[in-house]
Image 1 (spheres, rainbow, N blue to C red):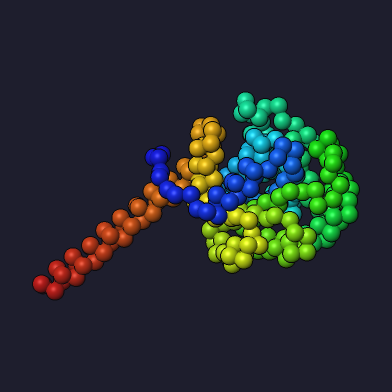
Image 2: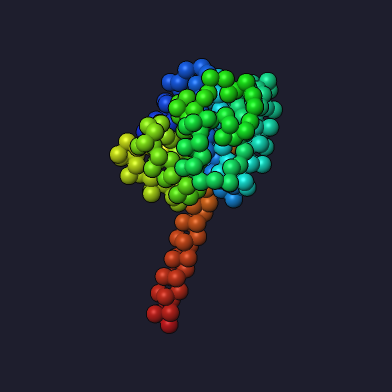
Length: 248
């Protein structure tokens, strides 16, 4: 792969800054609303969000609105723990998998506002001092659908800060929410994931373990170059043959 130079969008920068400005012990709620079919774009976002939170010693609550995403999230944490820097993190202490609840996000949030821990029926040191959803400092919803809009609707009522990570296809639908200030940042497609990685590497993250999206973006760029090359060759052959036929 080759090194790529690109600017960091203000939407990506805002996601990074919000987490970076949080205090040790603050709670972050990650809404893992995607399955393996979207991992090329969204998994690097989730990985960098979790790693940045771990670096800041924040408490990470990972919720799975779709049961098909649970194994993907669990495997990611297993792989993160293979890095020396994170080898001592524990489920129920630094992070916790809240699992899947077969209810709509609005019902889950209302329940969490009365009793966060009982909503998920989990145990662990991580819940200390977390009584309701009001104790969660930041919600990061990572999704390839309009699922995140459920949080946007509830944000006005409950006032939590909200960031999103979305695929390139669904991203434009969320731009108006950025303009109104309802979203506090957005990671947009594979490019957004690569920008987030670059920000983390600039601030000390090990490049060896934090360039999955960057490599994917390089592959995507190379494939587009090849595609344009074949389009050019095709056009050249077309016009050459047409000119040749006119002469004959």
